[in-house]
Image 1 (cartoon, helix red, strand yellow):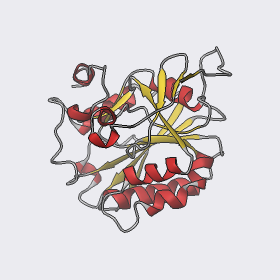
Image 2 (cartoon, helix red, strand yellow; image 1 turned 90 degrees about the vertical axis):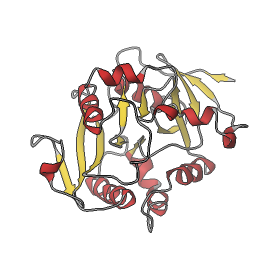
Image 3 (cartoon, helix red, strand yellow; image 1 turned 135 degrees about the vertical axis):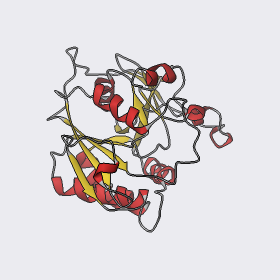
Image 4 (cartoon, helix red, strand yellow; image 1 turned 180 degrees about the vertical axis):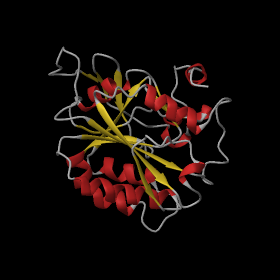
Length: 252
């Protein structure tokens, strides 16, 4: 069944009750992703350029969260003018936990949209408006712009069912889990903070799949667009129906 979208403001969407707050996590080096197959022209610096180019600064603020456990600020491509929070984590899970602590202390407005972005994602132009449309879907509490290709072919998802919604720009589906690149309203993040911490504490790598499966089983609605407006930069798992190689090559 396709569920229609209601109460859409026909004028161009603006962030509800303030600007979107983006937190982009970076590190000097990462051993957990060295084995991954990448697009031919892939680099994290290209993903950074893509994020900045598509940002629309009138609608969003961005803070870079840089883990210096394995190097110095000068070893990274982030510019001196970028808003950067420096810390020492050493592992993906530690960096995410420290990011949660940082965001919790900000005491943002409950309705503020917070977007966590890992450093190996690409975005299509216009993604901010699409993200906001996602939060207008009835009951949507978590939104990812990544249309997970694995949900279409892995045996574990053979019997996966989704509710389908539409907004003015695209269709959306419910999914059971996503990565650590996701958006959520601040009040929802604070409500679910113990669960977010639980699946990172005592680990080197956060158990993001298990965490979101836990949240969705508790009733939190997680949705992704079809086709995707972002992708993890792994060609075998990239959001389908988009030429990501072509997009990536525009930033080389």
